[in-house]
Image (cartoon, rainbow, N blue to C red):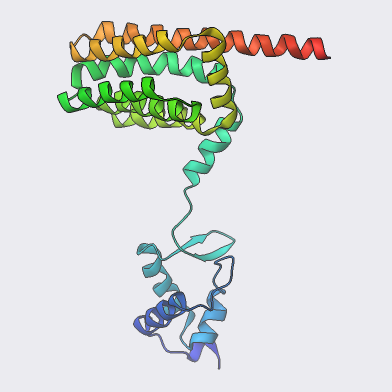
Amino acid sequence: MATSSLPENSVHALERLRGLLNSADLPTDGKLPTERALSETLGVSRRAIRRALEVLEAEGRVWRRQGSGTYVGQRPDDWSQHVSTLVAGTDLMEVMEVRLRIEPQLAQLAAMRAKPDDIDRMYELAKKITASDDADSRELWDGALHRLIAQSAGNQFFLTIFDVINHVRQDEAWQTIRELARSINRTRPVSYAQHRAIIDAIAARNPMKAAEAMREHLLMLQESLIRITSLDARQAEEVG
């Protein structure tokens, strides 16, 4: 049957495509047949197939990649992929440089905008960090506290930038080096006290003090990381 003689019933095409998506006859890679193949298989025109696919794409049932085809499901999060690539191409010192420029400003804004409930949660998260007995738990709650401060700043664009920076916490190498730095430099008690000072300043609605407390906290972390990376470099030279 020639494609040009097929019916232009887009509603029928949509119904047939929904049936296809709900069936078990989909390829393992999720890629649908071409519009021409679908037209011939389902017995409707290519124009009707194209219109039906537009509806399914708007519903999030399929997504299309230029030059590649149509795939079942929602479009992959290209931004997350980009962030992962970006983080993989940086190092800890670059991350700390950016944190030192961003997070004191977030603490300053949080001191002006944080809600009382947010501040109560900050204190609770600080307690969870102190009570944690393993590296994974400490990193988890520490990240939650810093993100809550960023969120309390009330600036979505700032929060997005923070989330890009914070993505590095998912890297196992970062967690290992952070924990080693805490242990060798014995900074845990100081870090806990600094967290408390940051939250106290936010609770007191003192923006400048909150920013300075956050800066002091991050500078200590940066110094600890410099020490541990320098130690690793010296040990590598000795082995070499």
